[in-house]
Image (tube, rainbow, N blue to C red; front, top):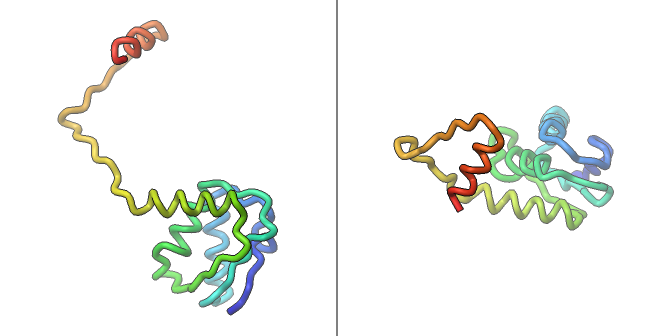
Length: 119
């Protein structure tokens, strides 16, 4: 199984969903079917990067058909990954539009008055 230092492809700051998509595209273009992705040299990662990375490469990557093993996950990356995993399986709340109430406020005073009324 090939080990890939993710910082050699994307740099040490993993900030955007686009970066995660670029990494997935890199793996596909290199015909990688199995990879150990090494995060040990990553300085920082955002939740949005990790969410996209998870959705594309870990959760349901049938379209890419790549087996991924993660190495060197720092505290931040690991915490975001766990958060993304938890929220990806929980059902999304559904709003009943027939019972929704929309408020059209024109001034800060109206907003303040409205917020005080819902305490």
